[in-house]
Amino acid sequence: MLYLTSFLTTLLLLINLSLFTCVQDPPTEAYLFASKRILNTYLAEGKDITIMYGIFNIGMKTAYDINLDDESLNNSTLTIITGLTDVTWPELPPDSNITHTVILRSPLNTANYLNFSSAILTYKLSKEDSNVVTTPTSSPKLVGLIANAEYSRKFDAHYVDWIALAVMILPTLAIPFMMFRHSNNRYATNKAKSH
Ligand SMILES: *[C@@H]1O[C@H](CO)[C@@H](O)[C@H](O)[C@H]1NC(C)=O
Ligand SMILES: *[C@@H]1O[C@H](CO)[C@@H](O)[C@H](O)[C@H]1NC(C)=O
Ligand SMILES: *[C@@H]1O[C@H](CO)[C@@H](O)[C@H](O)[C@H]1NC(C)=O
Ligand SMILES: *[C@@H]1O[C@H](CO)[C@@H](O)[C@H](O)[C@H]1NC(C)=O
Image (cartoon, rainbow, N blue to C red):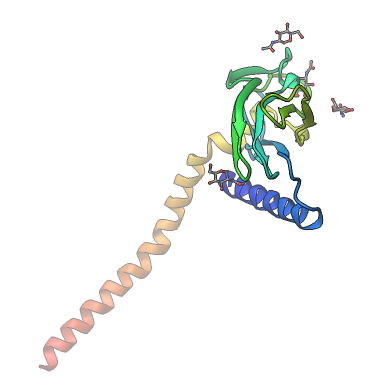
């Protein structure tokens, strides 16, 4: 599910990028486009949230001193498990991309949604440039949070259901199999007799 969603998002992103490049002349300088996505299908209280940033250079030249700063994650409600919220790369050539991941732990017993805003991306068009280009990433915005108990009910105890299902299905598979075996044996015996 997770792979499917990220595949679809990448596909959409690529379609967006190609539309962009069709409609407008390709920028002659470096031109960065940044996305911020949540990889989880469901978010639940007290569970990990994976945030993935993608930075794409759809321009014609290399971008330098690329900085991604996500102040929105630096707050008392969220715990950062791994990943930097302020990270810098020296350069990004045209037609290439960078991905960056941050894993958070969502809070227990708070609002039933989180409001994810954009991160800020800055970069330079040349190494010596004193001007910095600033652009926000896309933002996941409001994301619903499933209560912990409900999440466990949905996902943790499912193996019990599977075992129950297996036990229920077994006779329906076994009976036709026995009948098949039985008639097969009879057929074999008949065949042996007729010889
Ligand atoms: C988080 O924000 C506080 C104040 O807003 C700042 O002092 C602190 O350095 C920030 N932490 C990080 C990891 O950016
Ligand atoms: C990002 O770059 C990798 C190689 O570094 C490439 O395989 C991948 O297709 C690129 N993704 C996009 C969406 O351009
Ligand atoms: C912390 O950040 C999350 C997600 O960006 C947001 O939903 C939440 O309201 C923020 N909490 C505070 C106290 O700013
Ligand atoms: C979510 O955050 C954005 C930017 O921080 C803010 O403009 C918006 O009003 C927030 N929405 C809600 C429902 O809190």
